Image (cartoon, rainbow, N blue to C red; front, top):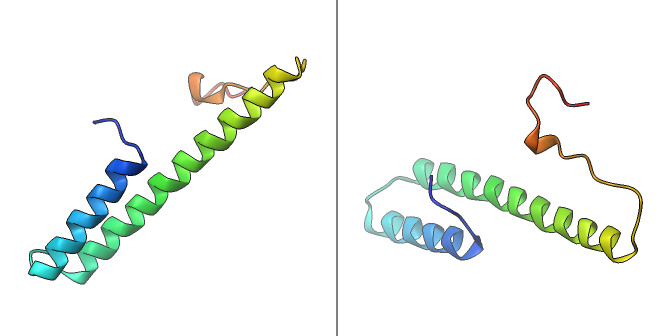
Length: 78
C-alpha cells in the first residue's frame, strides 16, 4: 500500500473522471471509486482532528490522554 494524502486522492478522482469521460470505466465503477475516496477522506479528517486535540492537550499540559487503541490488538482494547 502506498502513502495517501489529500492531493493523491484528488489526483485519483480526476483520473477516474477522465476515464469515465473516455468510456474506459462505467458510472458504477466511478461511483464505487468515489465512495472509497470519501471513506479515505473521512479517515484523513479523523487523523487531523485527533492530532489537533493531542496538540491542544499537550499545549495546556493536560493530565488526560487519548487512548492509543490503534496500537493495541483487537482483543485488548481496554
